[in-house]
Length: 126
Image (cartoon, rainbow, N blue to C red):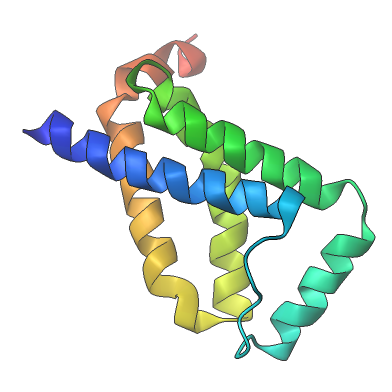
């Protein structure tokens, strides 16, 4: 039962990241009207750096795909940790209203990391 729940959570989380990554390339999701001014300015600054948004989008797509596939889930979690760190810090500093969803995503990725801990051990052993 635990593996089925984890699979469903990873599927939904992976699809959310794939959707967010695809939006970085195709811009099909509308911008929220109530977005804080700081967040709008930060987004405009990121768009000025031509390679940054495609890189973030590609990493979101890759991390989402890896998270969905059980065999590559541990690697997907590692790919998503830096992205989630940036999302968390952005929400803490500019849009605290988005913190609940970010904390849920972090909890899911942490569950994946804890569940796959033995796969990470060779990287940290002598």
